[in-house]
Image (spheres, rainbow, N blue to C red):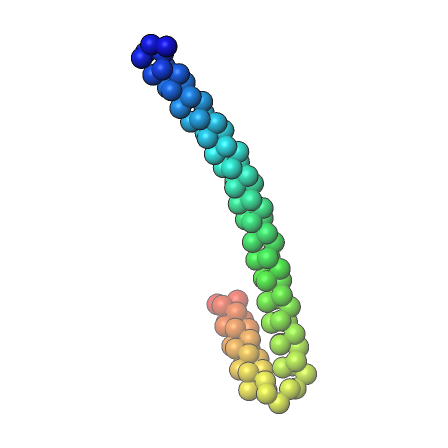
Amino acid sequence: MSNIEVIVDALENKISKVLHQQRVLKQTNVALLEELQQSKSTIQDQDLAIATWKEKYESLKMANSILGSDNDKRETKLKINALIRDIDHCIGQLSE
């Protein structure tokens, strides 16, 4: 074999390896993108669940404070007073 043929064969071999590595990287990239999408979906579901549980917690906390829990009586009174002030403010705006 001549020197040029050896160089061409080596070049073809390197090109083949690079193309194979590119295919492998593309497959890995696709797999990672799918995993990322699944992770994003899971995070959205968990965020929604957290928001729902926070809302339920606040409702339960309010219900317990309205029922007269000793720990939350002060907080309940403050919330009721704030609601009364809001209602008074609305009535004042309606009467103007």
